[in-house]
Each structure stands twice: as C-alpha cells, then as structure tokens.
Image (cartoon, rainbow, N blue to C red; front, side, top):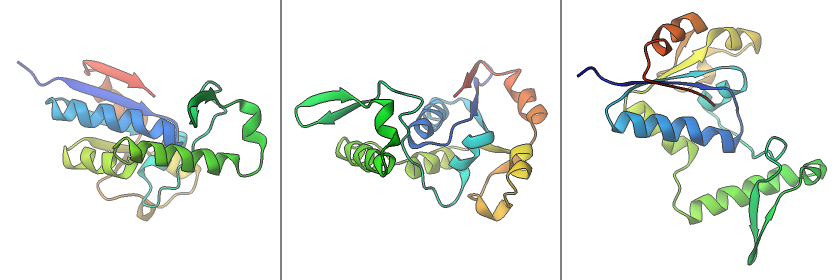
Length: 160
C-alpha cells in the first residue's frame, strides 16, 4: 500500500493559529503519513527563528477564558484596550503550560524531527523582504505550483 499524504496550507501567524498545522502534521507524520506544510502570508511567521506569537480574539470573539471559577468569552471590544492582547497571550500560555500542552517551538521541532517538509512561500518572503537567515533551519522556499504538485496527490488537504 502506498504511503498516505497530507498537505496543509498555514496562513495565520497568531499563537492560537500556530497549533493546528503543527499538531496535525506531527500526528500524521507519527502515523506514517508523508506531510508537507506550505506557509504563506502571515503563516510564514511560524517559521521564523524568533517567535513572538500573540493571541488575537478579533477572529474568534467566542474564545473562552477561565476567570476563577467561571468561563467567559472574550469580547472583541476588549481587544481594543491597551495591553489586552499581551495579557490574553500570557494567560493562554500559562493555561497551556498548566495543562501540559507542548509549546509551538516544541511542536515545530517535532515536525522537523519527523521529516515534515516545511515550505515557506517564496512570493511572501519577497513581499515582506524577509531573508533566509530569519527562518529556522530546514525550511525550503518555493512557490505555490511546487506545493500544489504534492497537494494534488494528497489523501488529506487542509487549509488553516
């Protein structure tokens, strides 16, 4: 039987959006899938050496946050308050750590160790004037057509 393939397109660069591509890719690789992740636009941030990812409630107004014994959604209006994004990020990182959830850096390393192919969108690199030295080792830079060759044969394709 041929090896299964999973293709993932990562387009977001916030802390909450960093988890799905790395969790799914590392899990699929552990199950024997050949996996490629194409990082484009803001998703390219997930491949940078120095991660400074924040939580954003703007795209997720129902984000639940535990406040003592009560869980409340974080209203989008709170995002406008100075320092709120940083506070939400600190709270989320502390909660994840208390639950034993791996960091983005750890999950990214698992993907590298499992031979997940990490592809940075060359067009996006050029658009934002990034240099190759800003990214972790092992990143391949290519255009969408190269990735689509793999994705066209994938058993599972995800857009995150």
